[in-house]
Image (cartoon, rainbow, N blue to C red; front, side, top):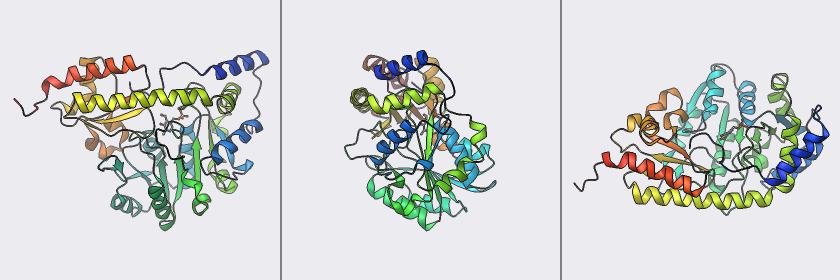
Length: 366
Ligand SMILES: Cc1ncc(COP(=O)(O)O)c(C=O)c1O
C-alpha cells in the first residue's frame, strides 16, 4: 500500500488500442507529439481553464518527473531557494537538491477539516530569495485540491514575489470534489510565468508506459524550460502515445467507475480510522487514492513504517520521505497509505494495521 499505482487492470479501450498499435508497427512516433493527442489535450485541458493553449506550448515528456527537473534547471539558479509546500511528493525535493538548489519549504498546517496553506510560512520561504514555486495541485500526499480562494491567493503570491510556477496537476482527474477542477494557470494574470505538467499515469494506471506533457501559454517559457533538456529525455514511446489518446477519447466511463469505487474506499478508510484508531488522525482526501495518516500518538511512532512492515506485513510509505532533510523529524509518525485496491484487501490491510498498533496505545481508560 505504498507506491502510487492502482491494483486495477488497464481500461479495455486502452488495451484494444495498444493491441492494434502492436500489430500495426512500432516505428518512431511523431517526434513533436502526435497532433491528434495535442488536439485531444487542448480540449481536455481547456476544461480545467487552460483555454487557448498554443500548439507550440506542448512538449511531451517520458513522464511528469522529468518536467519537474527541467523546470528547476531552467527557472532557478544553482544555490537558489525553490518553494515547496511540505509534505510533498518527494521528487519535488529531489529535483531541487539533485540540481544543487535549496528547498524553501512552507509546511502545510492542519485546519479543522483539511490541511491548509500557512501563508506566514510561504512568506518566509519567498524571503529566501526564491524565483520558482513548485505547486502540487491536487496535492500528494495531503489529498488537497486547492480551492478557488486558495488559488487566488497563490496567484497573488506568485505575482507579488515575481515567481515562476510549475504546477503538477497529475492527479486532477482523481477528484472526489464536486466543483470543476481549476488549473493554477486558468487565470491569464499568471499564464506567462507558469508551466503545467500532467499525464495519464495516475488516472489510468499506466505508470509503466511513461509519458507526460509540459504545457504553457508562453511558447518562449516552454522553450526556455525544455530546450536544455530535450536531448536528454528521448521521445515518448509509440505505445504511450497510443495509450494516452485512447484514454482521452474512450476512457471516460472507465475513469468514472474507478473514481466512484475509489471514493467508496476513501470513505471506508476514513471511517475505519475514526472508529478503530481513535488516537490516530486522517483528513478525508479530496483527490488522489492516497491517505496521509497521523500515527504520531503511537508509542513507537519513531519507527512506525518498520513496525507496520515487520509486524503487520503492511508496506506503507514513511512520512519523512515527503519532507526535505531539515524537516524530516516533523513528519516522523505519519504514513501514506494507497487505498486503490479491492475493498476486501483494503479492509484486511487496515485490520492488520489496527491489530499491530492498537494493543500498545494507552487509551486513558485503563
Ligand atoms: C504529484 C506527482 N507527480 C508526478 C508523479 C510521477 O509521474 P511520472 O511517473 O509520470 O514521472 C507522481 C507519482 O506518484 C505524483 O504523485
